[in-house]
Image: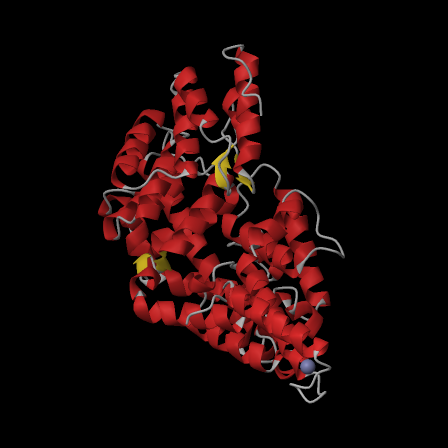
Length: 451
Ligand SMILES: [Zn+2]
């Protein structure tokens, strides 16, 4: 007979109750009956906690606040990862720098060295982001100079000069995607890597290429006690929710940690209480390892050395700072290699701010090919609204009144502001529907949804 885990918990519990009623004759008064039931229940509960853990939820309260003594490690790690991969493009770069520096200092206080996080754990992500954003901007700047002059901000112009020396003239490339594809496989990668390894942290945070202060670090500075793999494990575990997107070595470390938490905490040099901020489960890790063997395709690098999950993550960051052009380049390149469900959905999403008509076309194509999920319906509502088809938009949003789950969505509030569309992570789709409802009240179009 095949019992579910919760049924086994129930059976063990009932057995312990029966055993107690019989004066613990069965377990010969060792109380093993109770211990077994409690241990198994705890194992199942831990597995549930580990599977439910979501870094975006941990990060959500800290998205607009300065990190403090209570900020969870996962939120600190995400602040650093987000700010360093987004780059100094926003209007409030001073605030961004301070937030990043504070988050790094907090990590340092928890014995997680900032240099290890940035220069080892996030090395690949930061390098990829810099190459992506600077090359796309290099292409448009060089291909369309205004009166023969560059219009890019100062920090970008120094990267453009570096790219000139590695990629040659812009006429060699038909578009930004081609320039970027070339850059990702060129000597530029080593140059950016070298910059990341030897530039003072304040200048790394500001993506400063010329006039940067250089420093020299040893292998000890660049890693936690356990070395490169342990460093990457710490960063994966606190910056990436899905274990399926972790590096393979990180899964091995997670298994080792589950078997010998105290020893691993000593080897890594990070306290057990910090490591335990993320719940873990052996069943979950082994499921993920087994899945990789069964479905290796999900871990294929679909574009520029990134997996699909990494690309989606990067898209959210790019769109979050209003860089839809780079996001579209990224998703189109990835689509040509792997036209998957998630990427196709992402393409429609990226098109909404700039080209709602094309976005609607993509979304409808997506819905006819795949099962329409609540997030896609929400995207359709936003797109219809942007196209001026308000009553259809409200009907679509209304159909989500009882939908569950959440995700990244364009905020209804920004739809009406006439300014740049804003992205927000909604834990509950219902909150998004309530915001959308306000649009209908403003327009006096239809009666409120009555939620
Ligand atoms: Zn007993």
